[in-house]
Length: 122
Image 1 (cartoon, one colour):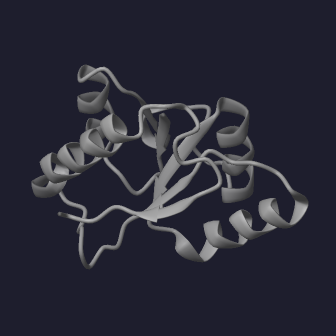
Image 2 (image 1 turned 180 degrees about the vertical axis):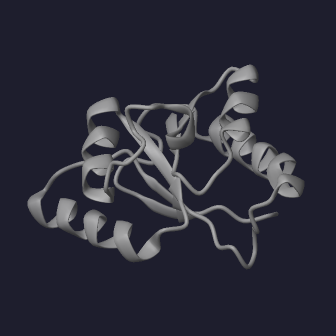
């Protein structure tokens, strides 16, 4: 699975996951993604066959529903909650470990196709 980390997440997470052999990029690590609105970012995700990790339920659930209504496919959306998985320099390791496990478990490019899931600390 190819993954994009939304702008909420440190690019260090993507760097550490790449060092473990995963195809992970971050909005903060790619100049061409910075400043895109969520709809534009969604288009890039589909074009690049990437799933996304985001906290932005409010904006991405409607995009998932619109894609389903049109019969369009996407490569997956994984959400986190700032309550269960706060973002800070102290939790970068937690994100790397949880995402490494997710990516190993779902290695196929389409492993999360058309699915929505939640990343949790356990």
